[in-house]
Length: 188
Image 1 (cartoon, rainbow, N blue to C red):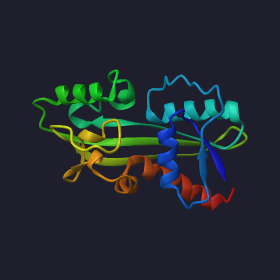
Image 2: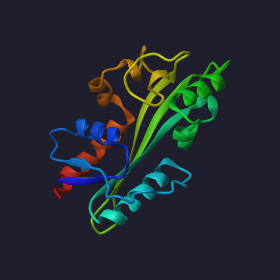
Image 3: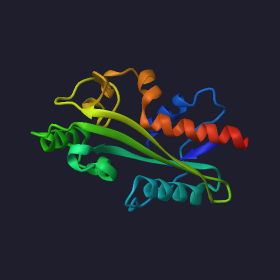
Image 4: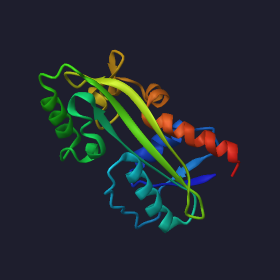
């Protein structure tokens, strides 16, 4: 079964296909013209906006996710603004670490909301995946992307984990497994 993944990020498509390898589901990029306006106030709203936009141009099964980093000590920032918290991934990490100076509560979580749209254009399934961790004091690791170098899971950052290790525990993996489990039950 092929499902349009509401993204223009080839890395995300590859990561998600790696996670669901062997499930019988393959994710593909949407047709040209995918350009949603993410103006929701929650991960769930933005996920739904992206899924509906991709469905409009594909008219088939569509899955979207919206994810980000929520830090307790920063009142859940950067949250839905994670990808736009600064101009580059390095600047985003720099900003978070600067804002965290002097804050003892380093608890954080990666959140991923997913929305699955059926070929009729209706929301078929929606879920949320979470990965709990803490914010490191300095970046570490060469793998992953985004905030991975400062997100500690146990005593290692996400960027210090192998792709396989990360795919077992990530917020995206958690949500995606819920979607795949749902699809296996409805046997579409």
